Length: 216
Image (cartoon, rainbow, N blue to C red; front, side, top):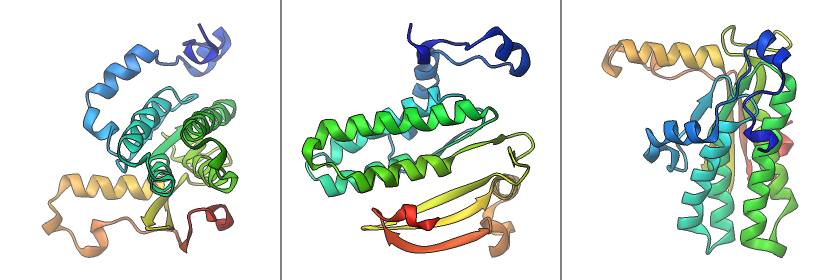
């Protein structure tokens, strides 16, 4: 059994944090319940207790399979759509070491798939864009308090794609949840335009998809 297949890291972590990782068989069984969404490139997934990424990496695998099926003949098309697939995955995790491990697992798996397809044609700048997205989307914090480890609100970035350009809007997790709750409690016709969509705390100008790390 590999490290990532183990369901616990230590008895102390189980005792202190209730940390038990979901086994691969159970992960796949649950994802099969929403199979069509896991294979849709731009469908968004949030794992509020993502651990070291057992769910997210399987969703990424399914999404990249869909990207391969449609776009592997064109490196440019593959890069855009694979970045879109990666940007649709979000996670919150209480333990900092799990956050780093999750980000690393997602990135290394992505890089492996990318290199297998395009070999000597790979772009290091592109890989840095992918790494940046995982760093922004996998957050160290508490999904119950909606706060990051430093006590500030959890912020998620929404990524938009227009040809070679990427846009970014940042939202607090609390704002996203409040907006979602309002929409489930009333029809869209009952809501004012301001109530229909969450308000971003920050918006960024569009940049080339190889330059998104410049946002910081």
